[in-house]
Image 1 (cartoon, rainbow, N blue to C red):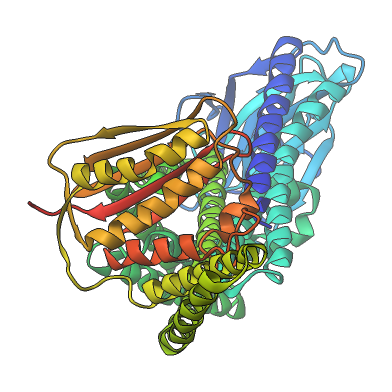
Image 2: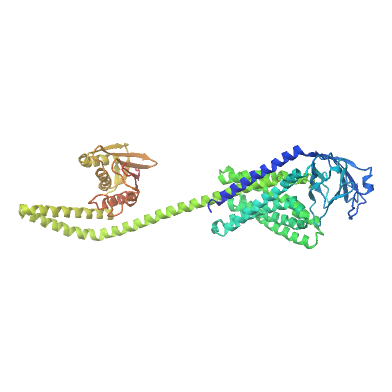
Amino acid sequence: MKRLPKILAIVLALLAVVYLCLEAYPRQKSTRDSIQVKDWQILWDTEGSAAAPDAPPERVLQSPDWTAMHEDTLPPARPAGAEWAWVRLDIPQLSWTIPAVMMQKVYGRDVMVYTEYRELFDAHRQYRYSMNNLLLPLRTEDAGGSIYLRMKINETRPGIIEDVAFGNFYELLNDYLNQDLLDVMLGGAFVLTGVVMLVCAMFLNRTYMKSWLALCFVILSIGLLVISYSPFLFTLYPAYGGVLQRLFDVSLFTLLPSFLYFFQAIFGNGYRNVVLHLSRIQLVYSSFCLFLLVGNVWTDERYFSLYYLLTTTVLGVLMIVELFVLLTCSVFYSLQRNKDAWIFNGGLAVFAGIGVFELLQYYATQEQYDLYWWKWGMVFFVISMIVVLGRRFAETHNQVLQYSKELEMFNNELQRAEKMEIISELAASVAHEVRNPLQVTRGFLQLLGERSAVSDKAYIDMALEELDRASGIITDFLTFAKPGAENVKSLSISEEFRHIEGVLKSLASIHHGKIVLDIEPDLYVRGNSSKFKQAFINMIKNSIEALPDEDGKITIQAVRENGEVVIQIRDNGMGMGPEELKRLGEPYFSNKTKGTGLGLMVTFRIIESMQGTLTFESKKGAGTQATVRIPETTS
């Protein structure tokens, strides 16, 4: 689930690349093998009726009022009362085995196509969608004649027809299908992606649910917009054109509030909650538009002009405002070095730039411009949104892992603190009571040793040695219970370690090692001198006992760093593994045969009492490094 957004983004990107490749190739081929027609003639018919003739009437064929047109010129002004227009195309020489003509943009709700003597096409739509893509087979004997198109014009469109080509039927069919079928495929890919995301939403945590569902509806809406905007389905399934139109409107009304909510879920409410306010306004207005859609259908489009004004013109202006605000907010977040904002801003810039340009072009041409490039802006934008959401998932996942690690660390610290508290209470209550009888017993054994025979003296000495060992353990317990809060003063690090070196130098020589000091001058900490020495003697003794048989070395370094004195004790001894490192400081854990683990436990306690920290780094066979950090003080 963590990698799903990245996978979806890759899939959409691959589909977009495939789409571009498939769309570009047939156009190059058809341009080479077909004849492009750029000139035709137009005739406004003020006498036309709804009845469809079987062939162009004689008054049309013989009319002197035909006006020459070029693909880049606008048709002449429509005469008063004229609802029908005739367009005449000259048919070139047809050298193909199966000739055909393809007209990719024919604007009219009712369209009929004829030659001089027969009908080629007849379509009557009961819904307001005027674009037709036509592919009509011809006969060889049609060469040199004309094609007549009769169209009922409800809206003034530039050129009335555009993109006319004569060529081989199968080549034009390939171009005809790829032109709009690929749009349907692209929209279907969006819809499939949205459906997959909706299914995956059932397995998501509630933390991700809102932003995930918002993106689902954005992608679904975009897919349905691309599908229902393409003229392919209107041409292939004309009976369902009204349904496709309603689907386009509903998708548009759903897209805008979903998109705003997604932005809000990812980046917040914006400056002074501007995104929140826009989201609420758009939600209310989209709901109002849905209500208008129901009313428009219920009244059989009797008030379509009002419906079109509110759901297309006003909504388009509102969309431009929203895109501008979101783009401004996104740029603001990008300037704050928000990586998600950079990615989102890239996709939004492409989409908003294309969207604003096409909308402005649409209104500048009096709503006669056909929106085309917006779907490519949508592709880039959806990919950027999926990537942003994926990054948020990954970031949240990493935060959960980090919290889990911190929780585990706090739990370990709590367990250790509980153990230390128990040992401290035990030491405080028992140590004194046990020490007194041990001292008495030791005294009597010394007296008995003076009076015993030489053969018994060895046993007496062994008993005294074990009693001293038990007394040392009790001393450690007492030190742990009371690590030395009394007699606290400023300690010179260099002086303390010179004394420690003098005590342990001979012990290091016995173990074939040496101690090297590297102490910065004028380093001071606050603490109890005897306890400070005890803590570091314990650590250095452990290092000495871990040294190899030859060339053992212990380096003690002390430096000043960020208001702390950092003391490092490094040896080239046998080292420890990860499991052993984790247990350092636990009572009764020791790598030595007769060790109790209490010495290092006491060391931890003394360092903590000085407000310091103690950490170890080690690798099996590569030595160990102990690092102590204690707040620095003045002399």
